[in-house]
Length: 235
Image 1: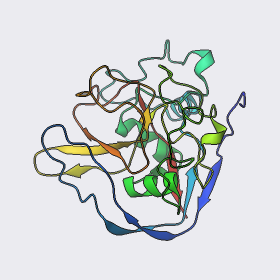
Image 2 (image 1 turned 120 degrees about the horizontal axis):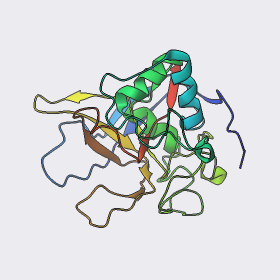
Image 3 (image 1 turned 180 degrees about the vertical axis):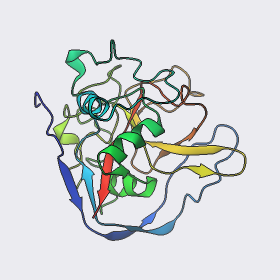
Image 4 (image 1 turned 135 degrees about the vertical axis):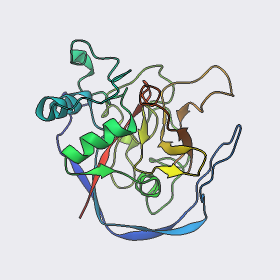
């Protein structure tokens, strides 16, 4: 494991197309979204090899002066404007989708769309997990009870070499859907947290073809300790 995660390390993704089909668990209500199967086009991209870390997010704040209009729960795990020293290379969490998009814009990038995330995680082979077809707790943070550094599991890379897509922290995507009743997006990859009851959000590392519907509410409620993000740049 590196002491300092590589900065600005991106993976080149060539244009492609694939049949997108995603599983969505519905406990109540519905999800007005086309879950496939349908053909989608992948643009040529440079994708961040790792999720954005606390260290990188602080560089963004220091250089841009970013302050959200609604700061409730923003970077709740930081103290006096900075992260715990030992968490420099952990994925930044307690950020909303808007906080993530602000960072991405500063970096000249954007978030991945839901269908892009699935392709990059599963590869052309459409693997069930980034590293293969069977859950392997030695290759991801499935249930360790807390976050780990983004480079903790090098054997958990996707077929493209993208890291930490499975478990640890969920990832925001670029999509925002308005079905006339709600505004929502999706979270990808699962996280380390295992809820005590099936009614709660699915915990642990999630298969590549699963996403979680997330209702967009006020910014304080859109931030949590299990969700981070990574960025991509179109060529």
